[in-house]
Length: 399
Figure: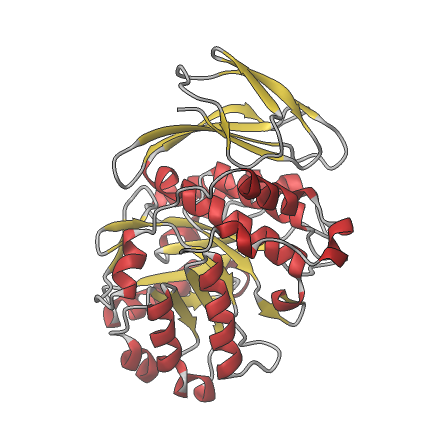
């Protein structure tokens, strides 16, 4: 008998007193009802079968793997940092796949790492995890180009701080010429009044970094991700959220902050999420049980929502400015053709409650909480109202 998802979620008793809302949201919800019926993406099914991978993307920012829409959800650095070993990488990869993640971007790979990389890709294929390596020599890239787990290559890190758009574009052309059926990826940082739009045409996937915890207000995540989405749409490329799971500045994010940032990015229209990092100098998620429990819940929720995010549209209902919460209506279709609608609401304030007061864009047929404790929001006909606590996220299936 298949073990229900929530069996992986409970925390050690000694930690329960310090558990945040972010973790309890996922764990308690799954104890109250059956796990969300998240279908395995067809791209992952084909990968596990070992079928060849042709990766492209649509102009709306959706990744296609052998023609199937794919929402990457994963991490940087599976044990390449802090004296990682091939054995530790295998353990970490198994843990990621078991938690519902499907994507890995590596740290720079040296010649010693490259010698073991084909076996890593084989394990990734069997686990249903796509990989984008960084730093391989042209010869080593050629050796792994036929691996089904290879989604493409990372071609630049912190691109707008180290390279001009012309330099990145020249690098991109080299990679695309050698492996035309794979995608290219770069990371950069969009800032207030600095959209960096010229970079958004220099690779297939553009990872926008948002690391506010310890340095800035968490509410900057949505406008910066929204800026990146707009630039990616203008250039016909894929916007990917790079979100913070490590210490940057004064402290690490809490689990509730991580969930809040994740949904700010998703509600902005991002077509994938990659956390920095799984293992790095600043963090080892093997040693963070509360954060890891929250991440498992987030992975399950996002996997459930992914088909609708890839096929549908996001309609802003409250914009999150001033004293408003951020609320969007998601309308989309599952890979089986089932149409659904969702209300996604969050409060990005750390200190104040935010009031939801809106009208749904279409008549609802149900009101089922997906990721909230209790019934935070209330519905009467088309009218939705309620109160969100600081940093709370609430998602309801309404159609």
